Every structure is written in C-alpha cells, then in structure tokens.
Image 1 (cartoon, rainbow, N blue to C red):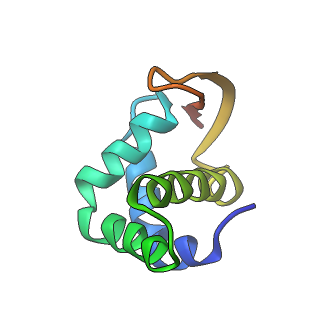
Image 2: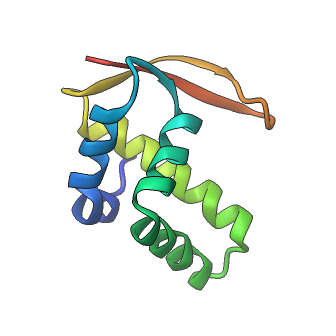
Length: 99
C-alpha cells in the first residue's frame, strides 16, 4: 500500500527523481539517488520512523519499502516495476523502467 504522507510531502521530488533516472533502474538505485538529491526530506522520514521506536536500519528499511510502494501506486504514468531481482545486500529488490 502506498504512503499518503510520503506522497503529500515528496510528490515533486519523487517525480523529479524518476525523470532523472536512466530508462532501466532498480529500487536501490532510486532511493540512493533520492537520498543524495533530497537529503533533508529523506532524513526527516527516517527520523520519523525512528521516533516511532524503530532502530535506524529498520527505519530505513520501512521508508524504502513505503517509498517504492508509493512510486508504484502513484507514478505509473512515469515508471513501472517490471521484475523482482536479487539484492546484492541480501533479499530482493525491484527492477523498474521509465514509461
């Protein structure tokens, strides 16, 4: 499910970042670029999850998951998920393409 707060507070930044991505990218590529290009808003979300009692690694994980659900739900005119692939750090991540 998408996150209404992320959409409300970062809609422009997310759209801008999607448009700046290469045609093929991963979720890891996306949230890494978002962190670099919009560090204050990115960090504000991480801190908001930490205030709810999550340690930093889990706060980051929650934000990344919610962010990519929001991208999938609300930005289908700009990008879409095409596959689930292995993450070099363990687990899985999504492969995306621009539309």
